[in-house]
Image (tube, rainbow, N blue to C red):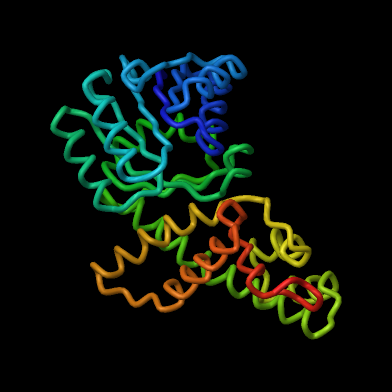
Length: 289
């Protein structure tokens, strides 16, 4: 399949690499041309200096960029250059509103748009084990699925345009609460004088077990926060969640509180720490307050 790919960062770069490895012809674009050129040279892809170049003749155009405005800019630039009947798949985490807007714009040009945010973080992208939650036309998703399978372990169609983004919001709500609980549990164990490794071994085999516990308990206990999804990104996502909740009437008291805790982490200089850095607000005995 001839594929254009925009956004070759910590998520998009590995995803595009898996597409090349699967035998697709991939033209990679990044806002930093140097990064796109390096990616192409390293992985056997094609270097595209512009969005338009990446999109020209593509049957599938995939993007993984920063925010709503980035998606609008990239999709608007790409649409006139895609092959007839092409599919656009957006892996960016955005508002549901912009997903619906881009779907309508694409349809006006005979192109299908699928909002398809992912879960699994950088490790999932590197290992080709992402979970994809998709909104939009189911038939368009099926046309794209052979490519998505190159870096995904699961692809779930959730409903019409915007449903993928709404499902990603559900994901981020659940993570926010679990990570705050993990931070408080580690903090409590330290203040109570417990051996945190033994505490983990005791509680991780029962109902308290979670991915966050298995992957972030020990690093959080050591005050190490360099292992994944950045606080700045999480706050962006929670902002989308809370904005949607104001529109649909959902009551997200815990999510709003955790969002403010992340603001405290940012004020501590932890913008690029991973999400388990909520623990940094709750120091153990002898740690800086």
